[in-house]
Image 1 (cartoon, rainbow, N blue to C red):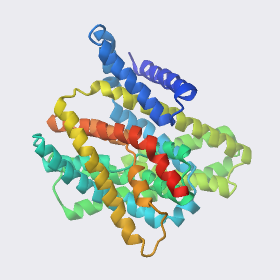
Image 2 (image 1 turned 90 degrees about the vertical axis):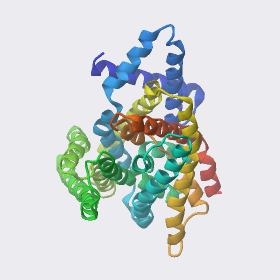
Image 3 (image 1 turned 180 degrees about the horizontal axis):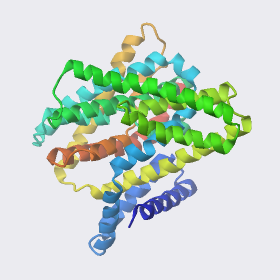
Image 4 (image 1 turned 120 degrees about the vertical axis):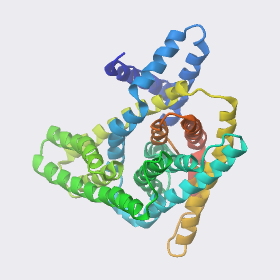
Length: 411
Protein backbone atom coordinates (compact mmCIF):
# COMPACT_ATOMS: atom_id res chain seq x y z
CA UNK A 1 0.00 0.00 0.00
CA UNK A 2 1.64 3.25 -1.13
CA UNK A 3 1.13 6.75 0.27
CA UNK A 4 -1.72 7.61 -2.12
CA UNK A 5 -3.62 4.47 -1.10
CA UNK A 6 -3.11 5.27 2.57
CA UNK A 7 -4.33 8.85 2.19
CA UNK A 8 -7.30 7.66 0.14
CA UNK A 9 -8.28 5.23 2.88
CA UNK A 10 -7.97 7.92 5.55
CA UNK A 11 -10.16 10.31 3.55
CA UNK A 12 -12.80 7.59 3.07
CA UNK A 13 -12.79 6.77 6.79
CA UNK A 14 -12.96 10.45 7.74
CA UNK A 15 -15.91 11.00 5.38
CA UNK A 16 -17.73 7.88 6.62
CA UNK A 17 -17.19 8.71 10.30
CA UNK A 18 -18.16 12.35 9.71
CA UNK A 19 -21.45 11.20 8.20
CA UNK A 20 -22.16 8.77 11.04
CA UNK A 21 -21.35 11.42 13.63
CA UNK A 22 -23.44 14.09 11.88
CA UNK A 23 -26.35 11.75 11.24
CA UNK A 24 -26.62 9.92 14.54
CA UNK A 25 -24.10 10.82 17.26
CA UNK A 26 -24.12 14.61 16.81
CA UNK A 27 -21.03 15.04 18.95
CA UNK A 28 -18.40 17.73 18.27
CA UNK A 29 -16.58 16.62 15.14
CA UNK A 30 -13.19 16.02 16.77
CA UNK A 31 -14.72 13.84 19.49
CA UNK A 32 -16.99 11.85 17.20
CA UNK A 33 -14.26 11.06 14.68
CA UNK A 34 -11.75 9.98 17.30
CA UNK A 35 -14.24 7.80 19.19
CA UNK A 36 -15.35 6.06 16.00
CA UNK A 37 -11.78 5.44 14.85
CA UNK A 38 -10.87 4.10 18.29
CA UNK A 39 -13.87 1.79 18.08
CA UNK A 40 -12.56 0.60 14.72
CA UNK A 41 -9.14 0.00 16.27
CA UNK A 42 -10.65 -2.02 19.11
CA UNK A 43 -12.68 -3.98 16.59
CA UNK A 44 -9.57 -4.80 14.59
CA UNK A 45 -7.80 -5.90 17.78
CA UNK A 46 -10.79 -8.09 18.67
CA UNK A 47 -10.84 -9.88 15.31
CA UNK A 48 -7.05 -9.97 15.08
CA UNK A 49 -7.05 -13.53 16.37
CA UNK A 50 -9.10 -14.70 13.39
CA UNK A 51 -7.98 -12.15 10.79
CA UNK A 52 -4.41 -11.22 11.72
CA UNK A 53 -3.59 -10.09 8.19
CA UNK A 54 -6.14 -7.27 8.36
CA UNK A 55 -4.81 -5.97 11.67
CA UNK A 56 -1.21 -6.28 10.47
CA UNK A 57 -2.05 -4.40 7.26
CA UNK A 58 -3.51 -1.45 9.15
CA UNK A 59 -0.59 -1.42 11.59
CA UNK A 60 1.87 -1.48 8.68
CA UNK A 61 -0.04 1.38 7.06
CA UNK A 62 0.32 3.48 10.20
CA UNK A 63 4.05 2.79 10.45
CA UNK A 64 4.53 3.66 6.79
CA UNK A 65 2.62 6.93 7.11
CA UNK A 66 4.77 8.04 10.10
CA UNK A 67 2.22 10.04 12.07
CA UNK A 68 4.81 12.34 13.64
CA UNK A 69 6.20 13.51 10.29
CA UNK A 70 2.76 13.60 8.67
CA UNK A 71 1.52 15.83 11.48
CA UNK A 72 4.50 18.13 11.99
CA UNK A 73 5.72 18.43 8.37
CA UNK A 74 2.54 18.08 6.31
CA UNK A 75 -0.70 19.19 7.91
CA UNK A 76 0.16 21.30 10.97
CA UNK A 77 0.98 24.35 8.86
CA UNK A 78 -2.41 24.19 7.10
CA UNK A 79 -4.34 23.77 10.36
CA UNK A 80 -2.53 26.62 12.10
CA UNK A 81 -2.91 28.92 9.10
CA UNK A 82 -6.62 28.13 8.78
CA UNK A 83 -7.17 28.76 12.50
CA UNK A 84 -5.23 32.03 12.54
CA UNK A 85 -7.05 33.43 9.49
CA UNK A 86 -10.26 33.76 11.47
CA UNK A 87 -8.86 35.23 14.70
CA UNK A 88 -9.25 38.99 15.08
CA UNK A 89 -6.01 40.84 15.80
CA UNK A 90 -8.05 43.57 17.51
CA UNK A 91 -9.52 41.04 19.96
CA UNK A 92 -6.13 39.39 20.36
CA UNK A 93 -4.42 42.69 21.17
CA UNK A 94 -6.98 43.36 23.90
CA UNK A 95 -5.90 40.11 25.53
CA UNK A 96 -2.24 40.28 24.46
CA UNK A 97 -0.73 40.03 27.94
CA UNK A 98 -2.94 37.12 28.95
CA UNK A 99 -2.14 35.24 25.74
CA UNK A 100 1.60 36.02 25.92
CA UNK A 101 1.92 34.84 29.52
CA UNK A 102 -0.16 31.69 29.01
CA UNK A 103 1.70 30.78 25.81
CA UNK A 104 5.16 31.17 27.37
CA UNK A 105 5.47 31.28 31.16
CA UNK A 106 2.57 28.88 31.74
CA UNK A 107 4.03 26.35 29.29
CA UNK A 108 7.44 26.47 30.99
CA UNK A 109 5.90 26.21 34.46
CA UNK A 110 3.63 23.34 33.39
CA UNK A 111 6.56 21.50 31.80
CA UNK A 112 8.41 21.36 35.10
CA UNK A 113 5.33 20.64 37.22
CA UNK A 114 4.20 17.78 34.96
CA UNK A 115 7.75 16.48 34.80
CA UNK A 116 8.28 16.37 38.56
CA UNK A 117 4.80 15.02 39.39
CA UNK A 118 4.87 12.34 36.68
CA UNK A 119 8.38 11.34 37.81
CA UNK A 120 7.00 10.86 41.32
CA UNK A 121 4.07 8.75 40.04
CA UNK A 122 6.18 6.61 37.71
CA UNK A 123 8.82 5.92 40.31
CA UNK A 124 6.18 4.88 42.86
CA UNK A 125 4.85 2.44 40.25
CA UNK A 126 8.32 1.00 39.71
CA UNK A 127 9.07 2.36 36.22
CA UNK A 128 12.28 4.11 37.25
CA UNK A 129 11.96 6.68 34.46
CA UNK A 130 14.68 9.37 34.76
CA UNK A 131 13.55 12.90 35.62
CA UNK A 132 14.82 14.36 32.33
CA UNK A 133 12.50 12.05 30.37
CA UNK A 134 9.59 13.00 32.61
CA UNK A 135 10.38 16.66 31.90
CA UNK A 136 10.36 15.77 28.22
CA UNK A 137 6.86 14.36 28.69
CA UNK A 138 5.92 17.61 30.44
CA UNK A 139 7.14 19.63 27.46
CA UNK A 140 5.14 17.70 24.87
CA UNK A 141 1.92 17.49 26.91
CA UNK A 142 1.82 21.06 28.28
CA UNK A 143 0.84 23.00 25.13
CA UNK A 144 -2.87 22.95 24.41
CA UNK A 145 -3.64 21.69 20.93
CA UNK A 146 -5.05 24.43 18.66
CA UNK A 147 -6.85 21.96 16.41
CA UNK A 148 -8.71 20.31 19.28
CA UNK A 149 -9.37 23.55 21.18
CA UNK A 150 -10.65 25.55 18.21
CA UNK A 151 -12.84 22.66 17.11
CA UNK A 152 -14.53 22.47 20.52
CA UNK A 153 -14.86 26.27 20.81
CA UNK A 154 -16.93 26.35 17.63
CA UNK A 155 -19.74 24.55 19.41
CA UNK A 156 -19.20 25.76 22.98
CA UNK A 157 -20.20 29.42 22.37
CA UNK A 158 -17.71 30.82 24.86
CA UNK A 159 -17.72 34.52 25.85
CA UNK A 160 -15.65 36.53 23.38
CA UNK A 161 -12.88 37.51 25.78
CA UNK A 162 -12.49 33.95 27.05
CA UNK A 163 -12.60 32.52 23.54
CA UNK A 164 -9.86 34.92 22.45
CA UNK A 165 -7.63 33.93 25.38
CA UNK A 166 -8.11 30.19 24.79
CA UNK A 167 -7.72 30.43 21.01
CA UNK A 168 -4.72 32.77 21.20
CA UNK A 169 -2.96 30.63 23.80
CA UNK A 170 -3.51 27.42 21.84
CA UNK A 171 -2.27 28.95 18.59
CA UNK A 172 0.94 30.35 20.06
CA UNK A 173 1.97 27.87 22.75
CA UNK A 174 2.81 25.16 20.19
CA UNK A 175 5.99 27.01 19.28
CA UNK A 176 7.06 27.26 22.93
CA UNK A 177 6.21 23.62 23.54
CA UNK A 178 8.16 22.38 20.52
CA UNK A 179 11.14 24.53 21.54
CA UNK A 180 11.10 23.13 25.08
CA UNK A 181 10.74 19.63 23.68
CA UNK A 182 13.74 20.06 21.35
CA UNK A 183 15.88 21.45 24.15
CA UNK A 184 15.02 18.70 26.64
CA UNK A 185 15.36 15.96 24.01
CA UNK A 186 18.90 17.17 23.36
CA UNK A 187 19.63 16.96 27.08
CA UNK A 188 18.00 13.54 27.46
CA UNK A 189 19.97 12.07 24.56
CA UNK A 190 23.20 13.90 25.55
CA UNK A 191 23.27 15.85 22.31
CA UNK A 192 23.07 19.21 24.07
CA UNK A 193 24.78 20.56 27.18
CA UNK A 194 23.11 22.83 29.72
CA UNK A 195 24.20 26.31 28.73
CA UNK A 196 22.15 29.34 29.79
CA UNK A 197 23.49 31.45 26.94
CA UNK A 198 22.77 28.70 24.41
CA UNK A 199 19.27 28.10 25.79
CA UNK A 200 18.47 31.83 25.71
CA UNK A 201 19.72 32.09 22.14
CA UNK A 202 17.61 29.08 21.13
CA UNK A 203 14.45 30.65 22.54
CA UNK A 204 15.28 33.97 20.88
CA UNK A 205 15.79 32.30 17.50
CA UNK A 206 12.67 30.17 17.77
CA UNK A 207 10.17 32.59 19.29
CA UNK A 208 11.35 36.07 18.27
CA UNK A 209 12.61 34.75 14.93
CA UNK A 210 9.28 33.04 14.30
CA UNK A 211 7.34 36.22 15.01
CA UNK A 212 9.64 38.33 12.80
CA UNK A 213 9.52 35.85 9.94
CA UNK A 214 5.74 35.55 10.27
CA UNK A 215 5.31 39.33 10.07
CA UNK A 216 7.50 39.46 6.97
CA UNK A 217 5.63 36.55 5.37
CA UNK A 218 2.25 38.09 6.21
CA UNK A 219 3.27 41.49 4.83
CA UNK A 220 4.50 39.88 1.61
CA UNK A 221 1.27 37.88 1.31
CA UNK A 222 -0.85 41.01 1.75
CA UNK A 223 1.16 42.86 -0.91
CA UNK A 224 0.81 40.00 -3.40
CA UNK A 225 -2.89 39.46 -2.75
CA UNK A 226 -3.62 43.19 -3.02
CA UNK A 227 -2.18 43.33 -6.56
CA UNK A 228 -3.52 40.00 -7.84
CA UNK A 229 -7.31 40.57 -8.04
CA UNK A 230 -7.85 36.98 -9.17
CA UNK A 231 -9.27 34.37 -6.81
CA UNK A 232 -7.22 31.44 -8.12
CA UNK A 233 -3.99 33.40 -7.83
CA UNK A 234 -4.91 34.68 -4.35
CA UNK A 235 -5.75 31.15 -3.25
CA UNK A 236 -2.43 29.80 -4.50
CA UNK A 237 -0.62 32.58 -2.63
CA UNK A 238 -2.25 31.56 0.66
CA UNK A 239 -1.46 27.88 0.09
CA UNK A 240 2.15 28.80 -0.72
CA UNK A 241 2.33 30.88 2.46
CA UNK A 242 1.18 27.93 4.58
CA UNK A 243 3.38 25.30 2.94
CA UNK A 244 6.43 27.24 1.81
CA UNK A 245 6.47 29.60 4.79
CA UNK A 246 6.44 26.77 7.32
CA UNK A 247 9.20 24.88 5.49
CA UNK A 248 11.38 27.96 5.07
CA UNK A 249 10.92 29.04 8.71
CA UNK A 250 12.01 25.60 9.90
CA UNK A 251 15.00 25.63 7.54
CA UNK A 252 16.04 29.03 8.93
CA UNK A 253 15.96 27.71 12.49
CA UNK A 254 12.90 29.66 13.61
CA UNK A 255 9.58 28.33 14.88
CA UNK A 256 7.44 27.24 11.94
CA UNK A 257 4.22 27.11 14.01
CA UNK A 258 4.67 30.64 15.38
CA UNK A 259 5.62 32.02 11.96
CA UNK A 260 2.55 30.53 10.27
CA UNK A 261 0.19 31.72 13.02
CA UNK A 262 1.53 35.29 12.75
CA UNK A 263 1.37 35.22 8.94
CA UNK A 264 -2.20 33.92 9.04
CA UNK A 265 -3.23 36.62 11.50
CA UNK A 266 -1.71 39.37 9.33
CA UNK A 267 -3.25 38.15 6.10
CA UNK A 268 -6.63 37.33 7.60
CA UNK A 269 -7.07 40.67 9.31
CA UNK A 270 -5.75 42.77 6.42
CA UNK A 271 -7.89 40.86 3.97
CA UNK A 272 -11.07 41.34 5.99
CA UNK A 273 -10.66 44.79 7.49
CA UNK A 274 -8.48 46.69 5.03
CA UNK A 275 -10.27 45.53 1.87
CA UNK A 276 -7.18 43.83 0.50
CA UNK A 277 -9.30 41.56 -1.72
CA UNK A 278 -12.73 41.71 -3.29
CA UNK A 279 -15.66 40.70 -1.02
CA UNK A 280 -16.56 37.71 -3.21
CA UNK A 281 -12.95 36.51 -3.23
CA UNK A 282 -12.77 36.85 0.57
CA UNK A 283 -15.91 34.73 0.88
CA UNK A 284 -14.51 32.03 -1.40
CA UNK A 285 -11.19 32.09 0.46
CA UNK A 286 -12.94 31.70 3.81
CA UNK A 287 -14.95 28.74 2.51
CA UNK A 288 -11.83 27.09 1.09
CA UNK A 289 -9.85 27.33 4.33
CA UNK A 290 -12.86 26.25 6.41
CA UNK A 291 -13.06 23.13 4.22
CA UNK A 292 -9.31 22.51 4.55
CA UNK A 293 -9.63 22.89 8.32
CA UNK A 294 -12.56 20.45 8.57
CA UNK A 295 -11.07 17.90 6.16
CA UNK A 296 -7.62 17.79 7.76
CA UNK A 297 -9.17 17.77 11.22
CA UNK A 298 -11.15 14.73 10.20
CA UNK A 299 -8.09 12.89 8.91
CA UNK A 300 -6.05 13.88 11.98
CA UNK A 301 -8.50 12.59 14.56
CA UNK A 302 -9.14 9.41 12.62
CA UNK A 303 -5.38 8.85 12.74
CA UNK A 304 -5.25 9.55 16.49
CA UNK A 305 -7.90 6.91 17.04
CA UNK A 306 -6.14 4.39 14.81
CA UNK A 307 -2.84 4.92 16.63
CA UNK A 308 -4.34 2.76 19.37
CA UNK A 309 -3.22 -0.19 17.22
CA UNK A 310 0.48 0.63 17.60
CA UNK A 311 0.39 0.64 21.41
CA UNK A 312 1.45 -2.58 23.07
CA UNK A 313 -0.02 -2.03 26.51
CA UNK A 314 0.55 -3.73 29.82
CA UNK A 315 -1.41 -3.37 33.06
CA UNK A 316 1.14 -1.05 34.62
CA UNK A 317 0.78 1.33 31.67
CA UNK A 318 -2.91 1.75 32.47
CA UNK A 319 -2.10 2.43 36.13
CA UNK A 320 0.50 5.00 35.08
CA UNK A 321 -2.01 6.78 32.83
CA UNK A 322 -4.62 6.85 35.62
CA UNK A 323 -2.03 8.26 38.00
CA UNK A 324 -0.64 10.88 35.63
CA UNK A 325 -3.92 12.35 34.32
CA UNK A 326 -4.74 14.10 37.65
CA UNK A 327 -1.16 15.37 37.81
CA UNK A 328 -1.44 16.90 34.34
CA UNK A 329 -4.70 18.61 35.33
CA UNK A 330 -3.18 19.84 38.60
CA UNK A 331 -0.17 21.21 36.75
CA UNK A 332 -2.45 22.96 34.28
CA UNK A 333 -4.47 24.45 37.16
CA UNK A 334 -1.35 25.83 38.85
CA UNK A 335 0.37 26.99 35.64
CA UNK A 336 -2.63 29.08 34.54
CA UNK A 337 -3.96 29.93 37.99
CA UNK A 338 -0.76 31.43 39.36
CA UNK A 339 -0.12 33.90 36.48
CA UNK A 340 -3.79 34.87 36.25
CA UNK A 341 -3.90 35.39 40.01
CA UNK A 342 -0.99 37.82 39.70
CA UNK A 343 -2.50 39.57 36.67
CA UNK A 344 -5.86 40.08 38.42
CA UNK A 345 -4.30 43.06 40.17
CA UNK A 346 -4.37 45.06 36.94
CA UNK A 347 -6.48 42.97 34.51
CA UNK A 348 -10.13 41.92 34.63
CA UNK A 349 -11.03 38.29 34.00
CA UNK A 350 -14.34 36.44 33.73
CA UNK A 351 -15.40 34.42 36.77
CA UNK A 352 -14.11 30.84 36.91
CA UNK A 353 -11.65 31.63 34.10
CA UNK A 354 -8.98 29.45 35.72
CA UNK A 355 -11.32 26.45 35.97
CA UNK A 356 -12.44 26.92 32.38
CA UNK A 357 -8.88 27.25 31.08
CA UNK A 358 -7.85 24.19 33.08
CA UNK A 359 -10.65 21.94 31.88
CA UNK A 360 -10.62 23.45 28.39
CA UNK A 361 -6.89 22.88 27.93
CA UNK A 362 -7.26 20.02 25.46
CA UNK A 363 -4.33 18.06 24.06
CA UNK A 364 -4.26 16.47 20.62
CA UNK A 365 -2.23 15.60 17.55
CA UNK A 366 0.85 17.71 18.29
CA UNK A 367 1.47 15.90 21.59
CA UNK A 368 1.01 12.46 19.99
CA UNK A 369 3.31 13.41 17.10
CA UNK A 370 6.07 14.59 19.45
CA UNK A 371 5.80 11.41 21.53
CA UNK A 372 6.03 9.25 18.42
CA UNK A 373 9.16 11.15 17.31
CA UNK A 374 11.11 10.01 20.38
CA UNK A 375 13.97 7.54 19.87
CA UNK A 376 13.16 3.88 20.52
CA UNK A 377 13.58 2.67 24.08
CA UNK A 378 11.79 1.91 27.33
CA UNK A 379 11.28 5.62 28.06
CA UNK A 380 9.59 6.13 24.68
CA UNK A 381 7.06 3.37 25.38
CA UNK A 382 6.13 4.82 28.74
CA UNK A 383 5.84 8.39 27.44
CA UNK A 384 3.85 7.28 24.40
CA UNK A 385 1.27 5.51 26.57
CA UNK A 386 1.02 8.45 28.96
CA UNK A 387 0.61 10.90 26.07
CA UNK A 388 -2.05 8.85 24.34
CA UNK A 389 -3.97 8.37 27.59
CA UNK A 390 -3.92 12.09 28.42
CA UNK A 391 -4.94 13.04 24.87
CA UNK A 392 -7.84 10.58 24.80
CA UNK A 393 -9.03 11.75 28.22
CA UNK A 394 -8.79 15.42 27.29
CA UNK A 395 -10.58 15.07 23.96
CA UNK A 396 -13.38 12.77 25.09
CA UNK A 397 -13.98 13.58 28.77
CA UNK A 398 -12.91 17.22 28.91
CA UNK A 399 -14.11 17.98 25.39
CA UNK A 400 -17.57 16.57 26.06
CA UNK A 401 -18.01 18.52 29.31
CA UNK A 402 -16.17 21.82 28.73
CA UNK A 403 -19.43 23.35 27.47
CA UNK A 404 -20.76 23.26 31.04
CA UNK A 405 -17.94 25.54 32.18
CA UNK A 406 -18.60 27.87 29.26
CA UNK A 407 -22.33 28.01 29.96
CA UNK A 408 -21.54 28.85 33.58
CA UNK A 409 -19.33 31.69 32.33
CA UNK A 410 -22.10 33.05 30.13
CA UNK A 411 -24.61 32.83 32.95
